[in-house]
Length: 338
Length: 272
Image (cartoon, rainbow over all chains, first blue to last red; front, top):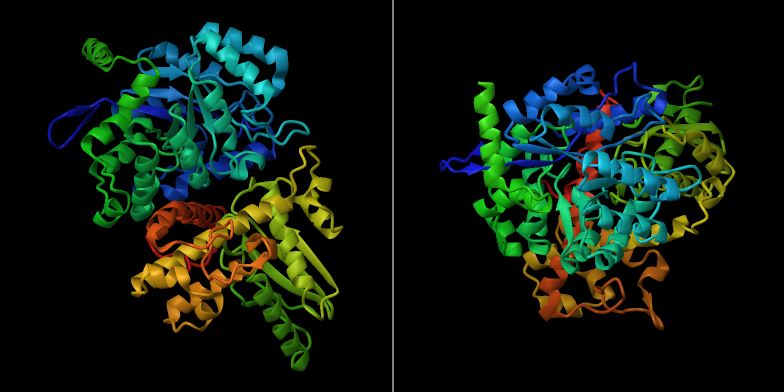
């Protein structure tokens, strides 16, 4: 819950969080070490100095710290877990649905669990997805289209194999497809400038929502062009938002582009926790105002209503969260705990 | 003779023989650095030298050069890494006195495959076969177009701010643009733009030949004064991409190699 200066309250849904284990004990090989080092690079280069963690803490912060950072010290009311398996790099995986489910069990009203699939897993993968959906009542998945797998250098969401999975998703009630289209963090190259596949599947699956994480940056140009034509394409702000600290002028330009092309109903907040914590991100975002000349360029404003939508209402719509009743439920739990 | 230089150009290891020979090496290294300065990271549209990617230039024999480079992450996309290494090799081999150029990438997931492939002059698809037919020339072309639009936008905005009306800008010929009197900043922007306006050849060649107009779209069509504003709005996202990448890559490089200071964002990009 975030209390604005005018006294009004905002319901915050953090659209992108992780609970990972990259401790030395869990690292399988050099790739695992390099992977967490790269994440740390993002953390170190885009965080305000007072928010910096040590590499040790960053490698494994633990569930208690996460709950504290999101819901106690931080403003999140709810958070969506996006898994990243990476079992080739980490003995028990980096950040798996199974691990996330343990925390969800303890805080059932706080977390939303998302799953994952890879169309290259064929029939077996479809069955696994079905089982996953049934066990965890999934409403969303996170995909990495550019992940290397054996000889494959990635896949497209427009591939027939992917379509089989989308058909399955429709049947299973998984309607939110989060796709990593962003900076290079895992072995990938094919998506390096390619968000075009979203165009096809968004047209062919109008009942599914495609949330393009990191807004396709560094392919913002292609992404905006696609998003403007497809009503079921959304932009996730993870990695984009931290620029509000180091390069606020740049952030202003990007968010105004997104407001211009997608509109305030199709932008979702995500902290990408533990890379960044929601407390400072939300605080800065709430205090942020678009410079005059940027507003003049696009004719768009970042109003209080827009902020409210981006920080929670849009995600609530996608994940069928009734904000009023969820708010009441959460405050009852807090009262009981106190 | 060995003369090693770090990224900032300081001499890292001395020469046994001083005097003319050392001066010769100095000059050669400077020549190599100058030619590498024209090699860009395609996504960032900035020089690999300015970005702090080059860690050492060594003249290993009178006609042999060894270049070492690094990238902001272990995971930097293999195709982009390969593309840069291959461009570096080609650039260095373009110097009249160089017969052999060895390019070393350090600290990368595919370091062996990339270094070996480059040494043998192989195609990216030979080294990383994936069967989807994607080759580096498609990437090169795509990013050359993006770079063309980005540099064009910067120059157009500069000209508009300097008081040139849209009608004049739309009608100006290539020759007239080249002769136009500009301030220092405008001159840099023009040079950068013309570099892409003329390269690669096929990008701007339409129909019978190159358009005589200085400002054309990526499809070779001339700009119209009445739609110039909309056009600028359209292409400005390219610059936003590059800026995002540039800021991110500089931050990641500095975090990965503490103590090194990659060059600051160049002036032509503009501070935010």
